[in-house]
Figure 1 (spheres, rainbow, N blue to C red):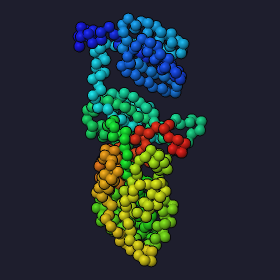
Figure 2: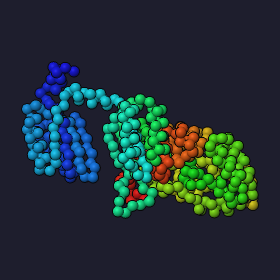
Figure 3: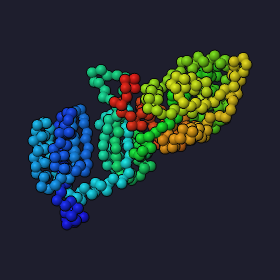
Figure 4: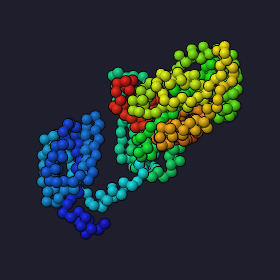
Length: 419
């Protein structure tokens, strides 16, 4: 756009960027706007960041040329009165139109979380963002501040980068984020920033080694004296080395004769994963539908369902004889990887939820189909093959890390939610 066209577009107006820095306080923005409103100033853009009560506030204003000098004069007096700094920068119409043109670019959210975040981790992430040709629009801390005087175990640290642009190579970006996660002990999630991300409604969990820190079939086998045989089959199945249905059938046969009372004892002592209480409380509070889709057993899934008010449970049912002992057989269709993906889609249909609004969380090879189907698939403390094939993963903190991938801030939650 040439100078003549610029003058025609702006008429007798000027574009000025205002940047205000200093100690934040209530009413500051209102005081600035009071001055601008007197001169019928148009706000073309506005943004604010507040870090430890230190304010960085920006306005892009369009003001009549005959009023610009008086506006700046009054703003300088007000800034002095409020004890903040204010600077003015003229903006050309060409610069402004360049900013406008960026509105059409893709937007993404890159979430980084771990027990703590260090400069070397953030340096690596931001360098990768730059190398992919993306620009950081905003950085937001999601986790609460950790006390130095009163440190606690199992801390959580999370920041969220809002970035704009088109990645040079999405597959390479995913690969490099996996490498960073492994080498720097952080978890990274890269998601398209759209309305689906902000409106997730259904979340489906694997049970064993996800909601609970155990494989219940292994615990049953331990009580029955066949642990080594069952554990070997379990590990092979979770690595994807043998068919899940075949492995499940073999393991069930080894449990023949086990008294159902043993199952009740195990259910009452399940080792829940770190962060489950907090996560379930928040998900229920904000109206998410929750499902357990498990290759384990309904007996334990229903126990967890009652504890947390979970909406759906689909798992495998063991056959019990009239003496209260396992027959070594199962009832109904096996819930394997294919079935988990089908169930996720079925529940979404029943709940009238778009697949892009669904979340799936699991750790094993049989979880990969549902992780792929869901709008957000998260591998949780998963096997290497699962991590490599999942779009997102959590390996450094508890299951409540899922909340950060959904955009929750600790400050959104009440006291119970922060436990």
